[in-house]
Image 1 (cartoon, rainbow, N blue to C red):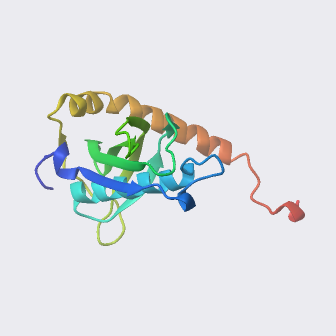
Image 2 (spheres, helix red, strand yellow):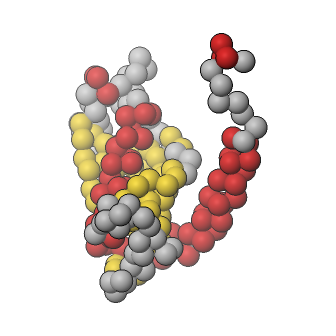
Length: 172
């Protein structure tokens, strides 16, 4: 396994215009479109850190903190904050900017977990991460709590899923 890497080595930025087809009838960006952008930049960050194929293992809640209006730009910043044996937590910050006034807002924050895969599609070890900035250190130090919450949520969802029928409605 490689030596530990700095968070900045996995840093990814994506900036896009928000055009009419990207918006709902309120004139704000579709949440699903933004979620696709979030998964995209997070996956690039995870690949940069692991230098291997990755799969999304989980997406923590995405809280939409401020609307992103048509005509604005949307900028996503992502980097790996913490690693397990084969998993990587990636933080994504979404900033919208009114290009005419320069007003900027943090519109969403999200954490995603990716697993690195070897050539056979099996989980493979990833380098540890070294936080340097205050933001990186804060996210790194709080990552274990988020990981425990993810594990607990996954167990609860597995238990709940076992209670659901997978039969089609007309088969019941």
